[in-house]
Length: 395
Ligand code: TTP
Ligand code: MG
Image 1 (tube, rainbow, N blue to C red):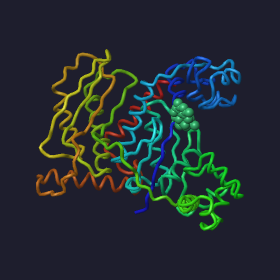
Image 2: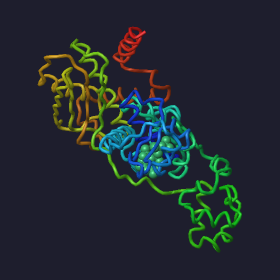
Image 3: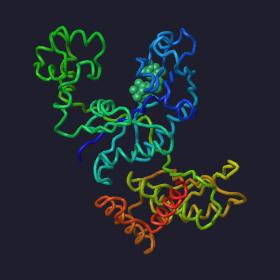
Image 4: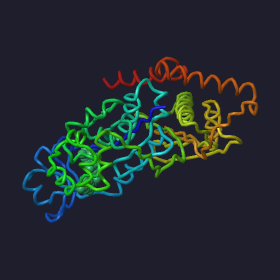
């Protein structure tokens, strides 16, 4: 199986969070950082970057370049919470991720490749879920390794999705300035330039023994990177503890059939995600948030872990019985936790369960081959209809 690594990096992260939370600042130059003139800029919205404002620039300089900018103090607690949400979403797609800062993380999507028509589609799905659940834009890069994936996420910015396919590594790297190479700081950049190596392409052509005299034992590593070779594994700093799916609805839901249908849909998404990651959940939780923001979560632990929609739905419906519905529902969420490998020994199950298990796996296969719409539960068709109707209403 070919290795595919994805790197996610949020666009103008702190500034985008501020613009999301203050609609009046959208489209304006927003500068997040020390508000005091002696502070430094943490980041600037793309509108502010047009004036030359950059991260780590003294705030006084930013005031000079962009006197009409909106200068705001950072709200680290909010950025941390958003960061955790983004990591959680990435963990819907991979059993482990490697966060490298609040707004950046690597994930290995090799296994997912078989569940989507292309690697682009994997990237689009993850970007879309981040946008939907946080209102923020992520740029992503997908490539055969970490170095190239990080490079790629930068190449498409903003709102980027850039793929470096196998075989194109050398060609894509060649024209880039040498400082873009991972691990090249000011000092090393100077050494390279003194040797006449200005682009990664120049380095590709320089024999390693020539490099050794100047760079010592780092020569081999830089040479490999210039050719797009990087075997570092994903160092999973976060492992999925749960897999969940939730939606907030535009209008509060009161119809019981509709609520049940939403529970069925979320159960389907959670079951599919579990199967993609070859995991099963033993504990199923149902979260309901009412119009008044009262939020109730109920959980149940099953005898054996499951990755089937029917089981999750059944558990969630039992949980629903324990909740008093006295007002409209604004959010429904289903989570599977207590994750374990799925039980393969079918003879543990009744005939009925064996059939369900086969049916859901066949459905996954057909979707892998022909796309999500090739074969879906009937409830999804009704859901499309509902969404279209509410779109119509908006118009
Ligand atoms: P970056 O990913 O480097 O920058 P960004 O997300 O603002 O913009 P983009 O990725 O679209 O180029 O950094 C992420 C956050 O980290 C950034 O929003 C603010 C913070 N940060 C600092 O506080 N100081 C810094 O010097 C840098 C570079 C970032
Ligand atoms: Mg960023």
